[in-house]
Image 1 (tube, rainbow, N blue to C red):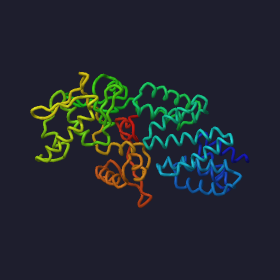
Image 2: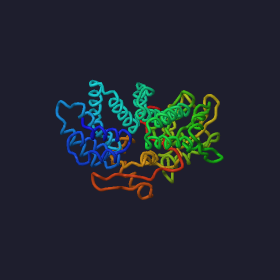
Image 3: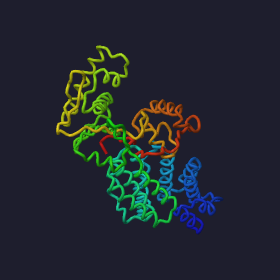
Image 4: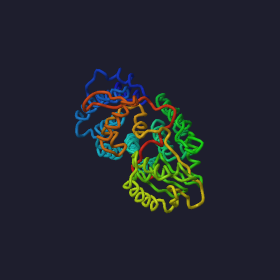
Length: 406
């Protein structure tokens, strides 16, 4: 490999895309095309980056498998940065196997980190955590160690493990300092700021109170029955009842928790749950059915008692009932949390991330656009959605999970 290609590669590893372009901007050989593509990706021109990487991958011959694998890995990184989550992940897995077969451990780890990042964007927290557990972060080069530690930090935050999250953050901070890459150090500090922001709200008779991640963790560790509006679960110690796919039941549970230690009136339950201004006999019959279903779901945690005017919830272990709500009151909080990363998202990628149809996402985005909380960029298939970063609170507990409790 000639000196210009080597120097350009070193510049890219150090986070200097302009320095790399100075050395290879006028060249069209496959290695130069690949480096130009990576440089354009670092500068944010993802369309040009994709084209250059595609040309480079086609230009490498059959005996240059590792070079083709590097192009595929770079293309996958560009897809992640542009929030195209539907790209074929098998190609990245094949590239990682090629790196391992040829002894290129560093690029194999890089490809693995991209796979983990995609899992996190899709809300597959358990799979991402399992993949991170196989990495020996301390033995990685500083740049990769910082990225890996940031992924561990994000997993711990979304699992509401404050102290392990701080440990991962310190690991990332030290590794970023050793790497000497300013953008990486800035990313670490930006992540650190989320720990001090409100992550949820505790709703009580005295009014809502903002909670940091540490306070949320302390609340969930208490003996109280916590109705968690962030994850749509009922939690008490190790016992959890998931109601994320039972919106009517969770709406009833939220109303009962809000009224505790008193009763929730039948008329109010019907108005709020069934969205009707004039409850009738059919609504009352449906309320009895839904309360019976909720009673069966909550049997391990609490008893639902019928009163003269409505229903009341009573934890089985004699503890209190606490209602935990998201830091913002919006039916589209998950979309706002995803858009808050500052990247441009397609509706298909948002649908994959939140686990709903593309048409449902489009309707929600139109409502957010009318409210001035999101805006469209581009037209047709190239249209993307962006939002100003959500300020004043953390988004970790708003992000969707693909099954499980995190």
